[in-house]
Image 1 (cartoon, rainbow, N blue to C red):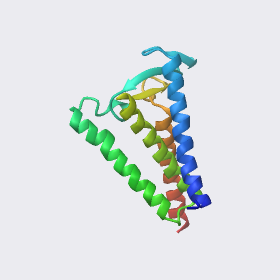
Image 2 (image 1 turned 45 degrees about the vertical axis):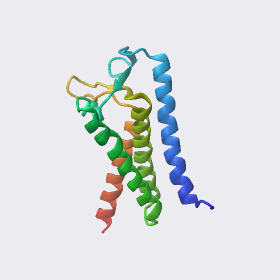
Image 3 (image 1 turned 120 degrees about the horizontal axis):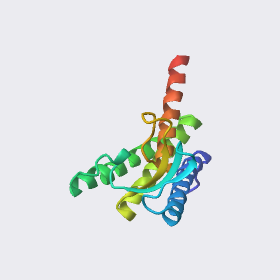
Image 4 (image 1 turned 45 degrees about the horizontal axis):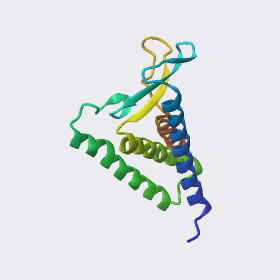
Length: 163
């Protein structure tokens, strides 16, 4: 079976997203002690090594085990599978949308892999501009998912504006 350049682009984008995320987490686990804070740009941008048993910002970490497995493993795997099937089948999607969906899928797979392999997701980036303007601790997979969602919103707004 010969893969089209479109399918290669999708699979390659997903694989690259997963690889970048997993390599970054390997480096963090190897070189940053848990609870250590490493300033990159003073206190504005710091690196940490936090194991997150929940989802975004630790949500769901206090759920009982069966519910956590359903909501943080089974449901994401099903959704990611459906999204992958959708982008492989829908030939009308533009390159930006394909990249955005691929980044979301890759980031999602990377975090699901962590939950399966380690029982938690390694988070390490923290941005704090002020006491109220700050992020939670996040990782590269989260960054890819957020970037993908942002691209999809921009593409959607541009399409609606051109109608």
